[in-house]
Every structure is written in structure tokens, then in C-alpha cells.
Amino acid sequence: MPHRAHPELSVVVPVFNEGENIEALVGALVPVLEGCVASFEIVFVDDGSRDDTLARIRRAAETDSRLRAVSFSRNFGKEIALAAGLDHAQGRAVVMIDADLQHPPETIATFVAKWREGYDMVYGQRVDRSTDGPIRRWMTEKFYTLFARFGETPLPPGAGDYRLMDRKVVEALRRLGERARFSKGLYAWVGFKSIGVPFEVQERLHGTSKWGYRQLTRFAFDGLSSFSTLPLKLATYIGLGISIFAFTYAITMLLRTMVLGVDVPGFPSLIVSVMFFSGIQLVFLGVIGEYVGRIFAEVKRRPLYIVAEEVGGRHGSREAGASRAQAAGSAPDAVPPAG
Image (cartoon, rainbow, N blue to C red; front, top):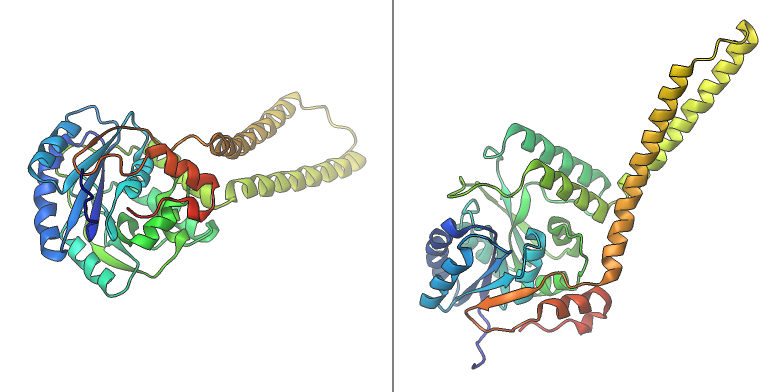
């Protein structure tokens, strides 16, 4: 197959059971991209969908060569799908966007304009969270407050995955081969000249969100543990507080015994105390275990994902496991060049 010139812009779309949204997304994206860049490609990353998502992408790619897809052998998660999109995108700049049309494609034109002004990263900022429920809004607010206070790098308020990144930002991110990925933190960690563009989140076109409270809680812990030692510090602080309390209580009981004499031993209070402190110990052993588990996942050096099939465009452009395995433990010059 002849070498294909690299497009000016790549749009990466992670998808999981988004079959109903594919045609509408392509119909909304293509006119916007044709109006703001000279050339582009749309790269779908199928994260092991069980519906007809890949079949619909394949039909769309048959009529438009600017569309292509990478399909995983199973579901690896959205964060891994975003990393795979960066591996396979060939553009001078890359836009990440969700498939449910909650990210308005029209904002891409503003992203591109800011990029041409010299910004390396242009991120979308949600102006409101009215589409989220009250509990989810509260949890999100508390997470960002914790991350801003204890994380390595602050996260821009309202910023998510919807953003444009220059090629040099993409290559910097591709060097980060960690398994427990928190992309929002990685975007902030690599730095570069950045600016936010406000946008309003639209209603989801079809289907429902794949992120429940359990997944969001796990994701939040991944973010904090990847960019902060706060959970381990909490274990230290709480342990120190309990020790001070126990010492104070012991002194109090000693003085009371000296003044009032020996009390009748309290078996129930003893059992409650033992169970309480045992529970605290087990909780923080679990926290330590989470960190040890992440170390174990890193040292195994498995590839982040496995590609089962590629659709459209130039096949075999980047091998799934090889680039990430190299990036995890090799020097920067071991990372394959763009294209």
C-alpha cells in the first residue's frame, strides 16, 4: 500500500457499544473538520464492543477513506483506549472526543484556531454540570478539591478528555507507559503551553453512560494514587492520632485508678476497642495493598492493549504492545517517531 501523507488533524474517538451514535457522530464531525483543516482522519478505538459498533464503523469507512478504526481483542477500558488512539493517530495535532455527542464537534474549530495561535494543548472546559445528577456533581467537586490540594499537579477546573494536543504533546504522552492511567492527570503533568475553551455539554444522543458510581469511585482512587501519596499519609496520620488518643486514655485511666481505685474490668468495651483498631489496621493494609498491586502490574510489563483488527487507512502503522512496552522502560529515543 502506498505511503499515506500525514493529515493535519487526527480525531480520536474511543467507543464501547456506541453503534447507535456512529452515523450521527460522523455526520457532525466531517463538515466541521472540512471547514477548519486542510486534511484530517477520524480514528475510532473500539474497546471490545459487543454491539454492531465496529460493523457500522466499517460501513462508514468504506465510503470515506479518512475514517479508520482499531479494534481491541477485549474491553481494556476507556483510559487504555485513549492511549491506543494516541499510538495510532498520525496527525500534526490530535483531538480526543467522546462518541455520544455530549462534546460538541463545533468546538473543534476553536481548538484549531487556538492551536494555530501557538498553544500546544487546548482543552475544553465544561461551563456547567447540569447533565449530571446531584450526587455525581458533589463527588466530582470533592475529588477535584482533593486533587488540587494533594496531587502533584493541579487540574484545570472543568477540563476533561475533550481537547486538542500538538504532536509534541502526543509524543510526550506516548512515553508514559504506566498501567493505572489517569489521563486528566497525565495531560497536566506533561505541561506545555495550554489554554481552556468553554463549552456546554449536550444531552447524550443514544444509549446510557458506561460510568456508574462504582467505576467513578475506582477511577477517582486511581487518580489520587497515581499522583499523590495521600492515602498512605492518611494511614500515618490516623495511626498517629489513634496512638495519641490511646496514650492519653491510658494516662487518664492510671490517674483514675490511683484516685478512685480499681474499676471492674469492662469486657464489652475491650472487645469493641479491639475490633475498632483491628478494622483500622485492615483498612490501611488494604490501602498499602492497592499500591503494591500497582507496582506488581507495572513490573509485569504487559502491553497496555491487544489489537484484534484494524479497519480502513494504513494497517499495522503502530504495533500495540511494542511501543508501549518500550515506552515503559526504554530511553525516549526508543519511542517510534510520529508516523
